[in-house]
Length: 111
Length: 114
Image 1 (cartoon, rainbow over the protein chains, first blue to last red):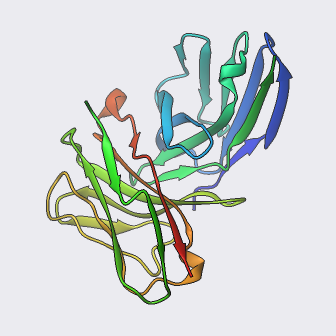
Image 2: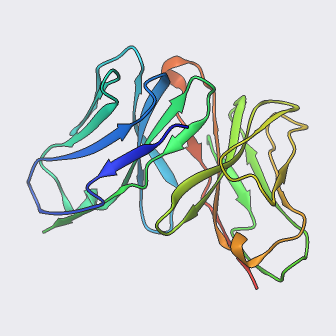
Image 3: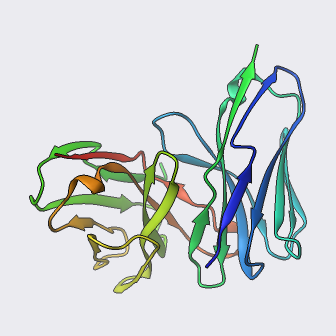
């Protein structure tokens, strides 16, 4: 059974700092890995998707990497802003198309 | 506008009273799924569907039913709700085609079972 772990569970940083969120998964037989953002009381918004054959994806100030063999992914956020404050979720889609989520990292960016 | 809609958004009910939460998407997606989100437990998949008339259990299917008679709709049915089904529920859809496999989530349904 696939298990997805996100570290840290919570992170507080001053505005402007670069930061890294970590995600690990136990079964490397994956279809893709996705990073989502969730604002309080809201649904999830897709940020980046990395196919199993890819090493990284970039969108604006966000960069996600994938090391399938070691079961790890990182989400790098450059020059953080207060508007980046949210919960960030990592999810892995297995070869059976089932999507398994981590519990998320609660990010607070202080002005 | 591409979207996933859920109804109702908020529901308070009593134990044992059957209810249905509707989910509809307008993007012609094959894949649809239901999740529940609970504090400390994260998002857990209840059921998913790869296409019309094809459904599979997720991690926590007990106490729930689904159906996929049309591509756009994927209702979640609680035949006899219990208090432990109080949760925030999300419906999602996607194409599952390589780079376009972006998950679109509905706004959520907050269910309270008394």
